[in-house]
Image (tube, rainbow, N blue to C red; front, side):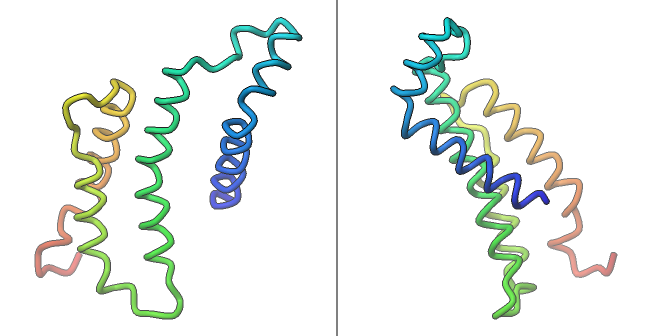
Amino acid sequence: MKVSMILNFELNYSSVLKNRTVVKTILCEDQCYELVLRDDEINLSNTLVEFLTFFEKATQLMSGEQYASISLVIPTIRRLKQACTVVEGDADLLKLMKQLAMNSLNKRFENVHKNVCV
């Protein structure tokens, strides 16, 4: 269910971007000006999708059936944590998403680097 929701969002979002001019024209004709995405909203959306792509790729990598994915756990978590590092110039919403994701990663995988069975 979650994967299909992500794929549907990706397809719908991609379609809106590709047909942005048409969508804008239709919304303006229907006097739905508040629904027309501004350039800054498009840029933020692209940034958020780019950030979330790291999690999509990690999920696909860890779902491999043709290879042993257990050896990929630590490097994948490290890469996700790198992607969650807040950098100067990040939009406020992106900062929040990165912080929440980092907190979740730290909570879920706090013992991943230790030689301890949990």
